[in-house]
Length: 473
Ligand code: ADP
Ligand code: LRH
Image 1: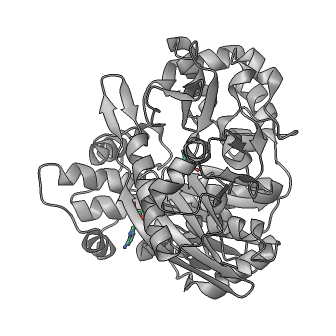
Image 2: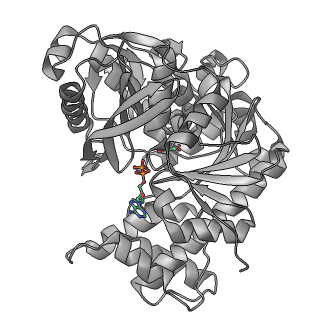
Image 3: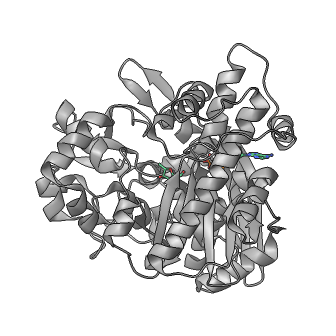
């Protein structure tokens, strides 16, 4: 029997296809394809290049099949909230990027129909202006829903194109704001109040469900046995990442750190207090019915968007060199509010940071190195604040902070989190999301023991995790 599965993991900045090998005491991953995920701005806004992503996924699966002809299954995860509209199975238009600015009017329209406290009681979600319910309302107001008879979130859309079967995987569906926090089903009453047709939304399935075999044409294009199935994984990337946190204790907080910093704790039941709502903490669906009680911190988007600005018309910047220069900065730098909404949309991030500093009486960073230092200090402060708030709101003790994802390679960031929190920080694995994707498939294929603790022990044994010990500030 094969022990191989293929994980497709699409982040907001890049995507990869990874081969995972799993047995009771072995877990290894091998990246077989990496590709950029570059959004496209047109006259009608900011979009994902979804066809290019699909082409890259199919090509990447082809590379996986050449290395490992017998793959037990394929799983797909991506960033949350974004979707395609469909009619008779055909995609209508090009999916919007959640950083598109069309949601502002929709937020007001939604809150005119259902107040924020009512929304929180129904869906348990933090307010993010791009939660799918606002985007769908923007579509409704633009008349775009009139022609639609279906909605699929990005991983479900790609799964549909691979298999012909339309479903909504629950962890990602929870980020729409339209799944009821108590029942785990589409919230019919909320949909009615928001004037969104319930018929748009497909059957909800749990991570681990087999979606179906590949379509014959697709299997031929990939070069793989058409019986190879697509399995629903924690298709919200953050759900997969949290599953693969190599925690050896119950008392952990996590930071899933890439484009975003998703900071929180894992709970067995939702935490729906008014204090949590006001602190903008979310109850997103985790694998196995767990709750990801977390807050979205702006994340390394602040850094990547600054680098994009500095590289405009100039030579490319080396990230390791920039981070080394930031580590060497000795002057005190501004700690700005990384959660400020002005940082959400694409644009000149250093200018926005400088603007924040001027408005708040802080010293504007004087060089690229100082800007980067200021960004990393500010992220560390926001992360530690979110860990403390998650712990106090949920009552969950935290004795260690795990950081996973691309940001776990940022040594300065990891050390500053340890220093500011006074807690040990365990960094890695970088590819936690793909690993969580692999693990759910491996469990569904019977390759690995079912408990989350057993899966996390496997991750801890298989991947290097670096410990940062708090130093006095
Ligand atoms: P996403 O899944 O959101 O696309 P990733 O988890 O891939 O994000 O993380 C991407 C981030 O990781 C980059 O924005 C960058 O800041 C950070 N990163 C990548 N490589 C390195 C590195 N060698 N050292 C430090 N940070 C890195
Ligand atoms: C991280 C992420 C996050 C969402 C955002 C849209 O990639 O999925 O959890 O809030 O993208």
